[in-house]
Length: 130
Image 1 (cartoon, rainbow, N blue to C red):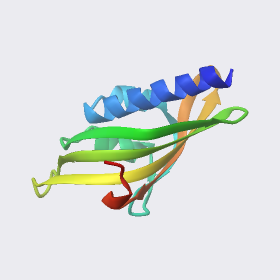
Image 2: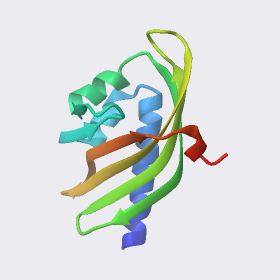
Image 3: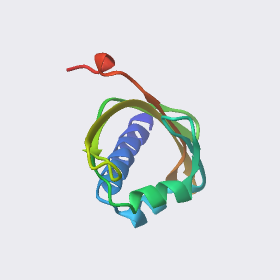
Image 4: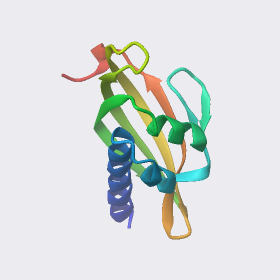
């Protein structure tokens, strides 16, 4: 059973990354719990509506995740990864690269897994395997 849950969470994370990169707000809305809370790299606390607003924006970005792991609990799973985001800043129009370690908490609600919490911590590029 844990292997099945691990595979499901990894698929959901891929779906979420793809939806965020391609501005698919409806898909992101389905994956995130109504009571979701997140903590950004800058320490701000965000809600579901903040994520949906960002996904609906025009910023061009791509995301690559490595070191992906899932820890299965009773009715929850904790996903961790090293994420490298690259894009063009919508305000400055300059290219950027950002490396973060993320922790996402998924909870089984009824028959569906929902993202309930996440946190991103910035890391320097000397901590990113080449």
